Length: 217
Image (tube, rainbow, N blue to C red; front, side):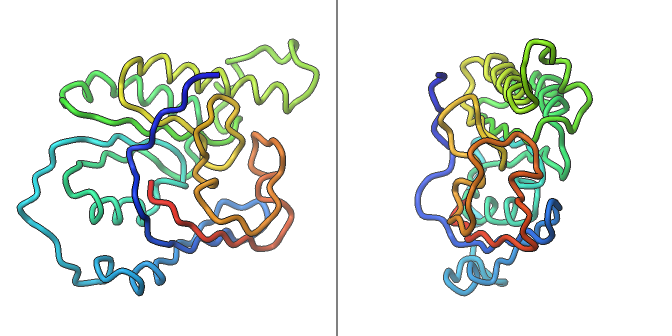
């Protein structure tokens, strides 16, 4: 089992209420109300120190779980000494995530201090995902998808070599290391499936799932 990497983010984090609406959908509404009420620094008109200079870079890539505005906004307020390069977008596929990191890696080497966050999503969003393993070698879909995702996570872990990094998944099971998924940073209000590498079993068949987040990544 590969050694889990320590997350760049640590310390106390504000609460965010995340609502996933609709069975099997990826529509996520971020409500920051509790954050603004409980911590004045996050209210409109907040104070900030304009003397802090950025001296490190965080390169983040994943799907919708880390591309919404709360990630960027809170990062800017909590970590003013870092430059966030967020290459995430809703529906991002794993193969494209890998190829994007590889394509942009040389450019990122221009920075002296850089931390990589690579957050994988469900298997099958890119057709190329299925080239990572031969389905004839597996007895079932879940076993096949698990092997694909393991291979993909291993691929980017080896590619990044000795770089500072945190490699995990957004909401599907993490078959590669002991790092928490993004959803694991949340206070769960529903029964989580044992293993799942696609969205449908994770979203369950409920009409609304509410998750109290105490995450800032």
